[in-house]
Length: 361
Image: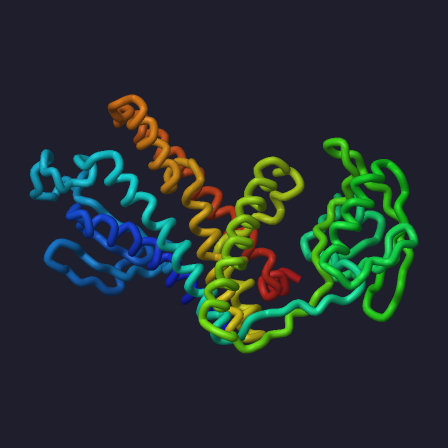
């Protein structure tokens, strides 16, 4: 059931994204002839006065169709309500509306989450927690540090129970490139002394692990509705900034972060694990994936919303659009690359599932 719940969350997020495009177009009087949730064979459809609504077999995507390039459309090619005949600003609103819808949806999901589970207050414990995500190539991993370890002290200095502990530890690491640094590690019930030599990167010491505060959230009932909206806004800002930083690291340090790329299979698996622990975790999962979906789509890559916005920006600067042949070639190339990446990630992630690996043992 948890897997189905995670798939349902993805389907809802895709529906929200496509609804953004659809409502932005219809509110401006722009023709929309298709609204589809999913890809593949049609399971259900309804023909409205202007638009065909459909649910398809594979709920891992969706699309809003416009009659501009439909050879069977009876609308005159010079009709002002065709998308391509609208001013650049009108088209930009339609194209960016999916991203905006996902961001708005994520924020209100967080509002709902904090309204249900309460407002978190952090209770700090001594030390700094090593966040999951370390790689075997990192200096820290090779020295023996593992995810879930708690770093209690560095160079004999205890890390206090405070949000400043992470800053203190990072400062010590960054100031010690190519010099051995002594860590006191707590792993389950055992304390270990591990020596790590930070490598020099960009003039600072670097050990290749993610560090987070050693804190446990304690929830209290919201004092008022303003506290719910304010807490949701702060968490929303953290998630958006963190998502952009994550994509930035993926681009600038692709060699070490490529293994963290995940496709729909891994996303569903992660959502299923969260749902199995606590059904309210699905709300946080929905907010995170909705923000990621928005950020991915706004990237200036062919076949994504950001790629189309880039074409509109060029058109606005030139005073006329790029030739259709160039746009079609770029979009088709981008679509092939994205489909290829998607298939690769699906195969890779599926092969890493426990039950699949057992089949080949």
